[in-house]
Image 1 (spheres, rainbow, N blue to C red):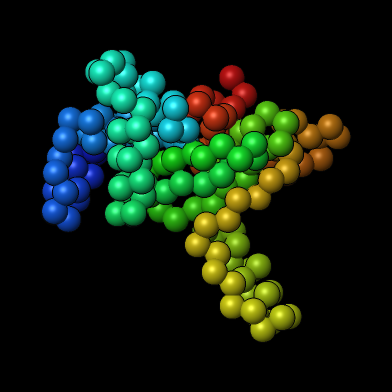
Image 2 (image 1 turned 180 degrees about the vertical axis):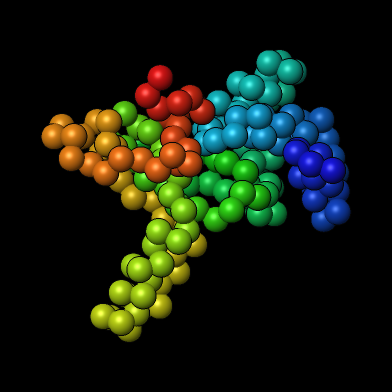
Length: 163
């Protein structure tokens, strides 16, 4: 069992009903393979069934977030973005110019966690960080470090940020 079917099984196994609306929301997130706003998820759901109300989409996203199936974070313009949280833990870099959302590996912040502990005696909870700045492509002087080949980059709406 793979893909969105495993997520649907998680929903049932935790005692929740598997409604067509919930399945459509999970499928929309699974097919996006990235970050989407509730409105974008709802638009994808409505392509399958125009009768689904936006409040149903929001309630489903909240349930999935509470269950740990979906994670939510705020974009640079304070828009809530959602993604499946069954992927490996990661953080987000958000470009203030093009609005690209770049996934950053968990290990990239290990040094920061150690630094904060050593310098301040502070045990940081770095489960999910959002760092705003300017991506390499938008950098005026072009001095930003090149992006790792395996890094996922999305613009709000699930599109490749620089296509």
